[in-house]
Amino acid sequence: MKKLLILFLLIPAFAFAQEEKKDTLWTTSGSTTLNFSQVSLSNWAAGGKSSMSGVFMVNYAANYKKDKLSWDNTFDFRYGFLKEEDQDLRKSDDMIDISSKLGIEAKKNWYYSALLGFKSQFAAGYDYPDTDNPISKFMAPGYLNLGLGMDYKTDEFSLMMAPVSGKFTFVTDNDLSDEGAFGVEEGNKLRAELGATVKAQFKKDIWENVTLDTKVDLFSNYLDQPKNIDVDWTFKIIMKVNDYLSANLITQMIYDNDVKIQGDDENLAPSPALQFMESFGVGLTFKF
Image (cartoon, rainbow, N blue to C red; front, side, top):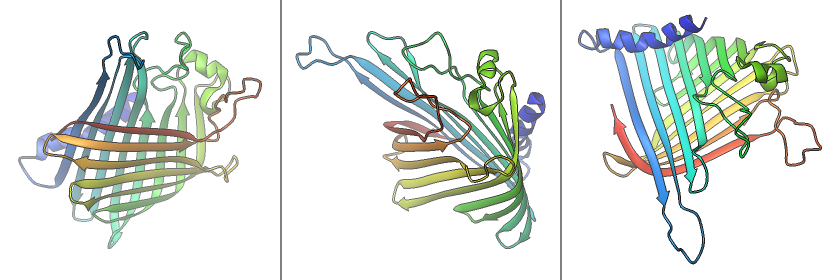
């Protein structure tokens, strides 16, 4: 299954490489961004710690359009680190988000569509300062979403509504699987859910050199507490300084009723909680 998934996701890149000299049916865009900060202190009377941090991001889109056929593919990767003078290098951010959507035009702006989405992370995550017991890894969790429905699409906005959807949660690490992490039953490495998916995306230049890019994924499990809707909302403000410098504000909010978070009070059992991430940085951006 992993080989089929990788092949399916690599098809757009290979297709574009073959077709770019023959036609203009493919529209592609991409960028790499490195945000970096450093603080160096020596005999600093006010106190503090020397530190450095960075976030590396890759965004790529490959979209195909011919007659009534439409195929949209996005690849979003993010990895961040933090290093303080008396600590080892720590992970601060980690994301793999791949989406592929195939549609056939029904009428203006409306498409019969099939959706495939994959999410995971690159490296192991820890509940610092404990670095002996990872709480997440690549494919622990990993999420695969499949859906069939209708897609309303313009140049700036897309709304995919898939009343027939499958969500598959993978926990391939033995220790995390035995704990029943991320909603799988203890000892199992896969949880399958049947439900409905809504996926909305919006990207627009709201001011000169300022771009708003946001997307939200919603999923409801028909067979188990359908009112507990899984939410994954990413919000970006991209401010272009010049051809190579940019400032980026990124927030991500996640709620998954199957993911249990340990609160500050260790006497209480882990429970579902709203997850929130915010990152702001200025760095180098290269477009391709």
